[in-house]
Image (cartoon, rainbow, N blue to C red; front, side, top):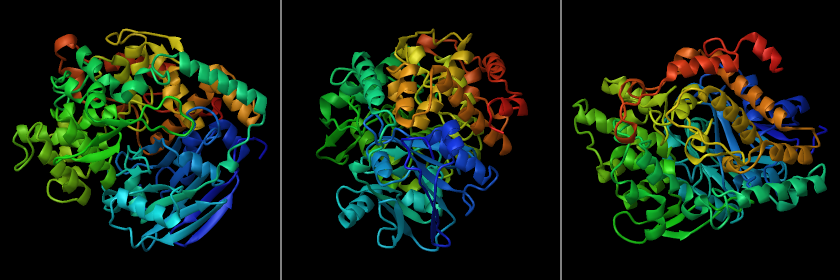
Length: 603
């Protein structure tokens, strides 16, 4: 392989046969799909789109990008790739911390798990070698105890990715958690890992194996430029920026004030208790530390401590989406209980966002008389009880373990499910943010706010280092913006840089970092074109699984039930935006035509 920056090594672990093979990366694939999200997708596509998610044929991959573990700022991320058991779509989920860097330092661009083991096992990555060990003594343990046990066994420098009881029981909202409580959260990747009886992946990496740029002088310059953009951008400024001061939860108050915070299962769009659960309140009452990820100057994570009481907890971190999902979305303004639930979800190995969606839906079902012995709005202790039951598939939790969409169908009213393609919404109401509504609907993994982070142009007013503020209530012109951001984010996810760099870095800085690392030419136009190729391959994968334009929709509530307060009378005008979006994409009613596949060199 001629490209620099790669270990040029992917492990294939057949858990059924107990065999391990190693292979290099196809250079053409690396140039077309980069790494992380894109390259993982290519391996998933080549494995066959029509496999069943919880079958031996489905693969579970962990991938870094060409910048992962380098000196590039905010380059500590990595990607989980599989077919989602929750949605039936292709799935990529991303994680911060230090585990991604350590995987690259262990000598791998990726590791792919195939088949199903006949007993619980875990994998060890070290010195370009994978070994498999018995996990019988940690099977059944929570994530935190599992990580502690494996770090005692393999050293405190080991990075550990683990599932909890939810993954072991193949709960469809199960996640994979690393040392710092960062989650491969969305889409049920933990259920695939549990199905394979793979309890954990232990990563032992040495910094001396940090990727070496093809052009070190150009790389240092590109990195200096990137750092300068981060330092001068208000959102990302180290020590003083909004993300550093209050973390992602800096959004809680403004989103509620604007009328864009889905509340009471999106029956409302403002939460009376937003200030009680805001980033500012966290900083005032429970903040004890500011940890950060590999090579990150921003430090948006918040280590919190509740030293006593029934919600006693010491954990990282109270992210905006998690606090919203288990807070305002369920009419719960008890911040200590929310922190406790986030930690509980992490230990059990479950997606906090999908859990919050499921709980809010169950609360509405209870209100409608569809559930006996259900759960009332804002009942924090009953929420905690149902979190535990969901992970163990017990009681009402056995239904919630199917995910919000399937549970709502089981309760008799699918319209209670605020999902797209089976994935629960995030903390943005599309009746305020019309572009976010289109981004939810057209996301290839379901109602995701991170396929196109429309909060940047619609709320913050800053995209890729440039001022760009659009009226969130205006639907016209949003399609072109959504397409562009989706493409750019697909590229960023494939480099495996933190998405928060997108507030600060112009496209030519991403291009310069990639070129200096790999030695391959790249410019701003090629960044977007490469992202477009990745996004279209995802869509093509989903098309082959049976998805089409009929699945690019929103919950009826956002289309027909007007908002209140600042967005009184507003609905999301999805249909005209979709028509414009398909035209910009060159798709036929949500389906990628063969001409587009050829144009992008996918086939």
